[in-house]
Image 1 (cartoon, one colour):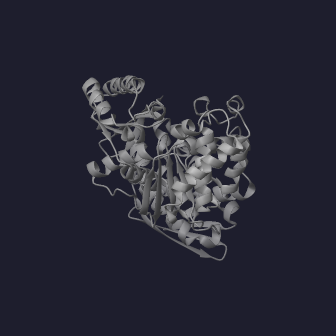
Image 2 (cartoon, helix red, strand yellow):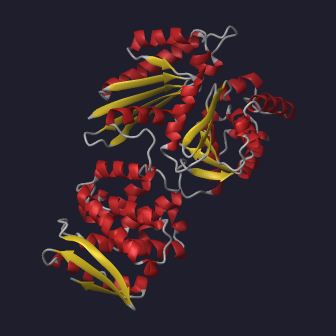
Image 3 (cartoon, one colour):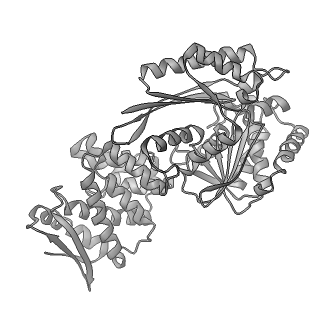
Length: 504
């Protein structure tokens, strides 16, 4: 068992994240702290970090060191980015930090920052190619990746804080200022022709794009507050950017989704994003809630646990992590998943579902029992809640909802489960039909191993006219399993318009 602390001293804010790694290799965040530093505006005319920058950074690092001690962390990985990197006395700050706190603060180069951010994105978003931008307080990293591998990357020395200071956009952005701002940013972006990639999605990392996503979600009354893997069109972004440009600081402080601490730098940040969109010509923007800190952790985890640095299948890896965190009997869950998928594959003429739903069924089947850690007697609905709120990567928000509903309803469909939930708007007849069929397949699979002894080793599934044949292969009479299967016959007939026949 280990506790790993990741410290990110950025140009706008500082973060501490502590993650617990268990003996079985599963991991879970146990602490998160954010402090506003604004180091990019605390650099004097000679290019040095001011005494105020030293004082605020030291105060923050002392606080972080105290929390690391309280949590008994085994290892601290601390990095500083653009503001400290560009300051002449940046190395001096790191020496003072180490002397005062015992923490070694590493200044990372822009290319390293870009690569680490890429690791955080590529392991948490199911996208094969695109352009990533990591917009910080004092720099912007741009990464082109194809086939999930980096092709090009660059770190540019402008970000939301130093650009806000340079063009004085704290309160508003006039027409003239906007023109000068665009000219400055575009002159930098034009040096990299590989940015011109209109067919690729633009993936955003950092507080600015997360804030834009939250503003859009609030205005649309989006059914969840999840921001990771939230997407919108480039045109939608431009519409909201134009609205922001007409506001002053006081007006922006009243906008839902926009925090007070970011209201003075959002104009510069959104203007930079607008320039990137214009240069790229993209039609789609995806928000990533994962970046540098997640990349740093994954870099450490891959080396210490001998796993690939870039996951081959991010849904599978994240599902297995959750399974190891909460499952009481992993072998049972894996056997149920195998049986459920066998029925899904061989009864396609009955359920008529697209193959994309196969992975949702597999995920729900693997995680269907994790709610037992809360309460056995109502574990299905607890499993549903946990799946809905778990860090499952590789699913859209709607796909995660469907997966959660399947896990929650494997003991029987209940519309009341989401009665007072904002997700209820997703429960249209088509989605309900899909969830009903997948839940039934999971219910049958769980029934096939109800005693959790793998007595039924495997099954053969077939269709003969109006009969769905389920042949069981078992050394002994699986009486408990057969009893459970019999109880689902009425549900089966209603869902598939066929009679379930059990053959030994």
